[in-house]
Image 1 (spheres, helix red, strand yellow):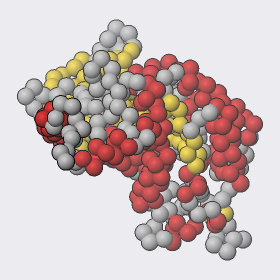
Image 2: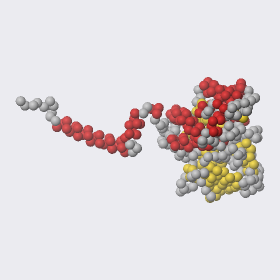
Image 3: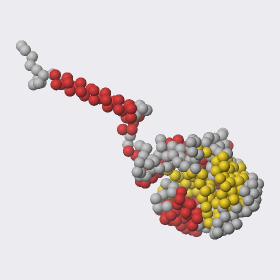
Length: 426
């Protein structure tokens, strides 16, 4: 009995089709490997992951735009330990954009930068929003440095490695009696600048990367050249590369009411020019230690300032951080420490505001021991809280930053998608 071929045209066309499909599969596999050098497993993971789990990457007119997170707060932020760890962790994920607000010399022992050191000659004096709140010249740092003597210097140096940048912008007060300054970038003079103008105002002097250089800076030196007044208002490093900048500034001893003192046209304009994608407000410890705090007035203050920033920065996502655990010495307690009662009420007021305004809020206290005003953190090894039971150690701020970053990354990704104008660098 002869077998019958079930295919009317024989096996030849089938074999030819299989060969063509195999060649096409090889081509697609080669393209896949070329496009995904990290491996097929990574590609499968990206395909199978839910859209919400994928990195948010968008393009505006083909140009990468850095992400900017601004953090305003009290002494927990001023030391740039908590915010510095936040900066480092976020940049590991989104890429390093080096937008920074540099300290204006040494206006307060608690003010520092995790990215640069600053050395000031003894002829400088300082005003801050906490010791001279009536001054309307404050910009984002809430302080200014001034001198009327020649040959006074401010030297900023990067702590660990050179920092890539777009421009370094120094803002000075101008006026009929203003003096002259000289600026040097990485040891080379950029020029001498006369700040005298017929009327008082502000002048911005930008420093740009050196032609033919690596696009990074190591030091900036400011030197006064006359015995006339020089008033430095702000030093802002603007980023060049895609990625995230965490631009933080803290006011030691401040409560939320410091924002009332900083409600000036100059401060508001400086914040608008920063164009933050997120604005994080981290206050509450100092008002929580105020036994005379009037809660209805405090609630009104919170609502007023949130409405202010929403009007001022309509495209910015606001985020709140409620205060960590803190305590006072109290002999009636077995551990010797007790949290002030107003601190819990401050957290409650911030939580209620966040809920009513649909704002993300991170509860710092929830990651800390609740009994004995966090006393256990002073006993842990390594120690997580300082002896004052208010501030944390470097390790305590690092652990806190890790928890906050876990909380805030989904907020960042959602903000990027909604804005549709930023490209994180992974």
